[in-house]
Length: 347
Image (cartoon, rainbow, N blue to C red; front, side, top):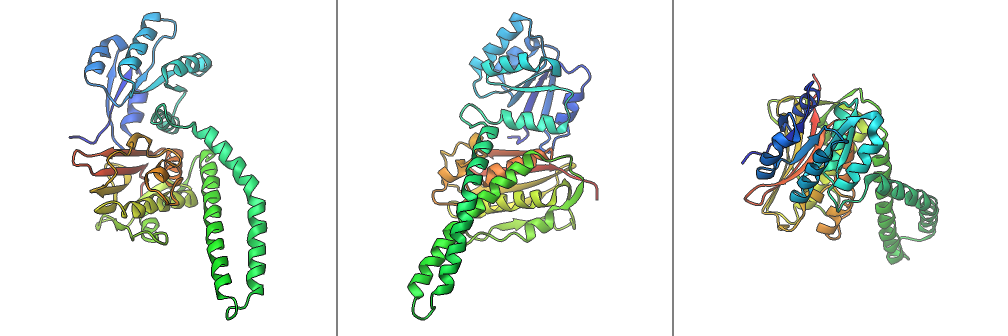
């Protein structure tokens, strides 16, 4: 069974979209067809994961064929292409077809974003709406949080360790809870920064980022493997954002260790890409809907009581901002694979 995704592109006369897709870190199998009708029967018989369609909005037969595809293949990731000046019309059709829109001119980052949004499916909250709401709540909480932390510090200074050990213990527990709230707010800010990232330009070595990861308190240590023959694996990007994404991703691997027989975090360099993979064997989560794995708080609902509700969403957002991909798959034997893929930079 191949792990490479299949993508069908309808009409790509210049071949520019196919080249961008083939150059993506996950190395999908890209098939180009001259028209939707040429590919319709094969698509219905052997559905790809994603279909990019560049066709006429004025042709009722073509729009009708797209509707047939959507009804027959509700899980198909559908992306509509068109010129920038027709974005409004494309968006209206995309809403009816539960599709995403990609307008020309496009580049690797806009293609990555379209694929990421197409991953969402019907049940996923809109990331922009979620982020706007979360940032608003975060701003509302920030000042009261700082006020509370300050007063707890004053109260702690007033207590005597010998006379008030139980009170000090309760204060420490309260501060740990506030630290968790503060960490969640930091994640929201990080996601917001990633969504407005400009073209990255700094070389970042992934190996030190993996080596200096420490599992959160209460989680098992994660087993992290890097290729022994590689001294460096460079990607181009924002160092602080990539560090946050890698550490959030590794923290998920550590958390999954509590419900799996074996969890490994593996760094590899397929082609000219860099891949960080969580491989979880014997995972007792057979009903986990992997297409929604990167939804905000999807992991929180799967692993009750963990603080990692935003971790996969954060990692995905940062990777998309760097022209990469985040995928979730399940092998026939039940092993779960969570991948972060990034374009690798030259040493």
